Image 1 (cartoon, rainbow over the protein chains, first blue to last red):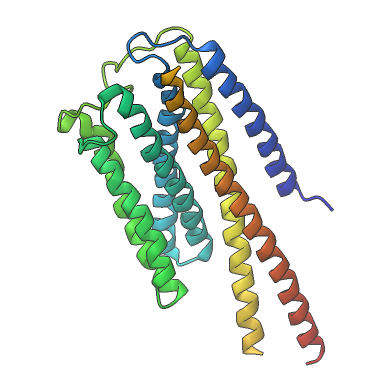
Image 2 (spheres, chains in turn orange, brown):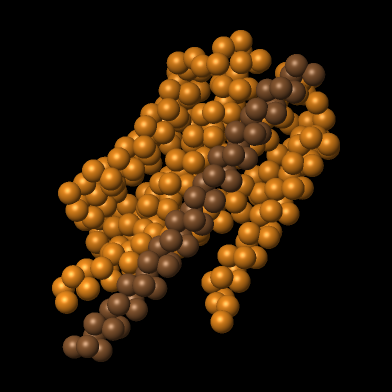
Length: 229
Length: 50
């Protein structure tokens, strides 16, 4: 029998696939060419939503980490595990697509600019979470250490957001109090649609990864029961 | 045309990353699902046998 959860996940799959197709169409066929940067600017329609989804993942990671440290229930740890993996994926893609844009725009692949450096720090913290889970003596120790690093990672997010203002970085700013860089008509609709698409994608990845974590939990529990006889 | 090479590589990286993550998760999910079925089957058998 097909469960409601499977149907919901299937519907999310379908919706995300369609939205992603439309987003690609808008990025390449509808959005006008930016006058100064030209074609490489079109990476921004995916780069910025992925950065926002990194922040959203880290927020969910913070909720899961606090929940686990408070209650010690595995469901919170599973949520943190799903969120840190999803966040690591988006953060990696942000760090890869950023330099692909930076090379034609700035002339260099990488610079130790404040926002780039603090984003790299977040990536290292998310990698650290995976490492402590792998090397911990037992599941509880790994979950506790991962939760603490998860909270530290969440503290890095407002620093990334404000880095350009605090250290006068050269990274373009889209969202700023009093208005960032205004988008031309056609660009703003495309950008908004891409954000909605990536929220759907984030929900899909998080739900799938959470389900995997729950299954792994049940499997570990069954092994323990078998060993106990 | 030279500019579009950057876009091609950027979007290729994104698609590969997303597809790899999703496929990896689905493959792991199927494996864990099968292992869980096997374990639950074994558990039920050992409980029946006392």
